[in-house]
Image (cartoon, rainbow, N blue to C red):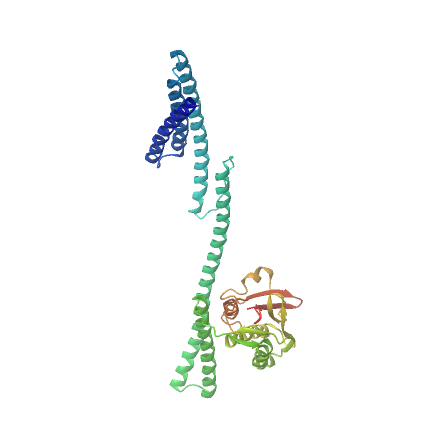
Length: 371
């Protein structure tokens, strides 16, 4: 029994010595290639076995011939193990290098394509993660490009929308100043109209800037959707009469919501104005408000004839107007962007889809009971 313990002790001491030397080698070579690290690990294991085996063999007082045989056998095993480690390490490093080359496409704006060669489970998992990240980056780049394009269009459109009425105001002011205006009262009325239009445009820009900056301060209070819709319909009724459009309130449930009544009135007002302006005379704009599983759904359905499918995703983009015309009633194209911003600030969502003869804008808000 004592012999067995002594043999175990010698084997343990030999293995520990080899392990300490290997740990030191790994620390010194930690910045080197993976092949070197794998070779060191294998060498440590082989050396530990060799040291333990030789220590035990020496203590067993084997003959010189037997000791030589044991040493040669262990040494050959060490050579084969080391060679195998080198080959395996080179294979892993080759796959790693291929993965590195494929990952460089991120820096050039390309998409990641995993190498076709087989790889270890870890490298395969890393490839899948890189493919997922590549897809997300591609989506992000597309959103960034679309946003940048939208911003450039907005700057160009707003510049045009501001320049045109300002030129008219300047001309009318000069005519009044020089006393050559045939009908001064009409000029003054027109100036007031243009000033109100400019004031509304500046107000929309300020509201949109607050939304984008996350500085939209809400003062929520409990209010019935019935009252919100009623006030919005009353405010839009003069414009509807002017355009010969019928406003219809359908299924207006008295559902309580926790919202900023001023901002939500602006949402409904923008949707109604947009619907009225795009509905032909003798058409109908219908408003509904009802409870659903998601909360409260407010909808405005117009008779615009529908929106092209390729434009449905752009309806709520800043500056989108569904037409290239930059004259009223097209507006500055900020109303629907403001709608989405205010609704999302209330933890809701805005959507649009085509229906028979027109399109339906929906605003989903959390009800007061589930907010």
